[in-house]
Image (tube, rainbow, N blue to C red):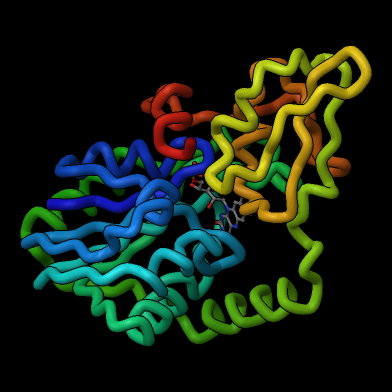
Length: 255
Ligand SMILES: Cc1cc2nc3c(=O)[nH]c(=O)nc-3n(C[C@H](O)[C@H](O)[C@H](O)COP(=O)(O)O)c2cc1C
């Protein structure tokens, strides 16, 4: 079994690890020319962004060829899945990928502009119980698609439409780096888009952002100094990394 995953803060990697098999980091796969994969079972695990899929996942689906009788998809999310699964099914189908099983898994919401991680951690999300159900389904080659409701699909098209009108909605222009930055470069190492360069500014080294931000927020969440802030955020001191992964694993996945 092959599992392709993308992660910003570890939720999707933690889930991918539980499925086992050979793990492939999507940012890394995209850097290679080898984009044809075959197996008796193939999984794709990634976070929901805007009730749909992150851009890096769209890019992966457009480029990759997956040959398998059983392809399953797990979309991790923190609050509302919307019509994310239906959206992704359609997108994958247009790119010749036909999926047998697709569901969401509610986890901690890492979208710092809206959610306070400390409050998120106090919520009951039954992650293990729900993950065990997904693991069991997939081990039995169950066929199931969580289509959501008509209103869920409206929510997805509305927010995706909004992103198109306002491309700066999720932009690194909303980030600022304060003086506690010690230039350690963790932000640059966890960035799945190689979009952060550490540059000398006067006597200090600091991260400088390019134009290719995924807005995964890994740079902010994983900064050891909590030196990167959003201009507007729910709790500037609350940061998140899934407890079942290490920083080194995220760096290896995204660097
Ligand atoms: C840019 C962005 C958009 C997000 N959009 C949604 C969303 O529409 N619905 C939701 O429930 N969670 C949303 N989230 C939360 C993540 O999907 C969730 O925390 C996920 O498990 C993070 O996975 P990761 O740790 O593997 O990066 C969003 C997070 C980010 C950074």
